Length: 436
Image 1 (cartoon, rainbow, N blue to C red):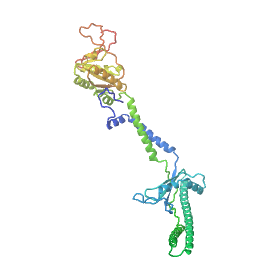
Image 2 (image 1 turned 90 degrees about the horizontal axis):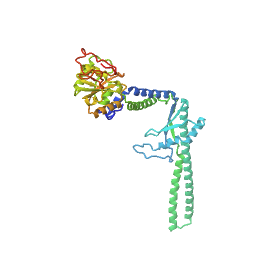
Image 3 (image 1 turned 60 degrees about the vertical axis):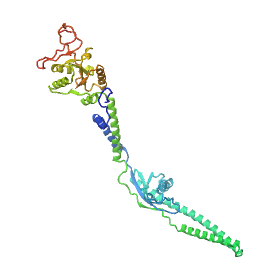
Image 4 (image 1 turned 90 degrees about the vertical axis):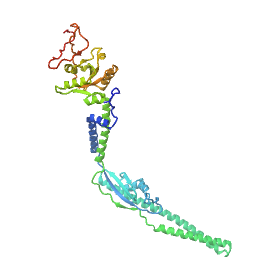
């Protein structure tokens, strides 16, 4: 329910208390959306088929000089590039080897993760069948280790061949130098150069021989499985906290949005709190429910204390409500002249105004229009009386005044106060057109 600029009260939504007050006013809509979101989340969880996840843990070990290493620091404590190895484990080559081992055309998708500061790969497979998930996870782990071994062996074989070719070239050059030395005389420059070249070739041949022997004796250890995938007993998805929490969160946002939207679009004044909050005027009495006989007297006392003059204008919102539900009781007990606004001169004669608001039917727009009209005529509003009596009240015929001929009707209805409610009878309601 939006506060219009015509009212002096504080605007809604200025602080957290106003937001909470709005949610309290629209709690039924808010709670309904929240329950609907939670119920939808549970329904989706029941409709989602369960899946199972199996994980195999593989310890990756260096296999040779072909490994792309990282610089070991305080944050990166492993020389291997595990991110690269994780991408290799998810490659199509490894997937093809796993499919060949399983005897299937298309294995289940695999997810590979790397715990921080470790040389371990977590190879996880999710499937509808728990046994299938475990078997495929193990197959991916074995396929990765096999591919890593084959890659390392192929690299070492290529390195051995390159080293052997270079060694043969060095040995051939060395043989040529030795033959050249046989035909040179000692002490000559040519003999010294040939001796130096022979020494260099001998060192190269020795280095290449050591490298070749090292490549021949290197053991390929791609890694090992440190934790085999077992058949999971519980599904990994759907997750009750995830679905229920997501549903409740969506319902929370939708409920808040619906409550704010409803409060913005609905301008009806439903409760006494709505009237005081939106108009900023005090509610002198609430006649919407059963009340004791002393309530009109209390209302009269508050009206007399707040009214700066003797003439009080009772303005009903909406207009068809009529002012007699309040004007008649006040006319008996309050020493004031009550005006209903039927005469065009009532606005000029009125010293103050009292608003009669019909709860559930009056709107803030109507109240704003009445407040603007009274403000233009400089008529102060002393308060508000709320009621649920929405039946239009008949107009009261005025009592004849001195000097007023009988049979002449006065357009305005002005109720003069009597001595007491016990001694003064209630004014008679006369239909228009008949004289007293």
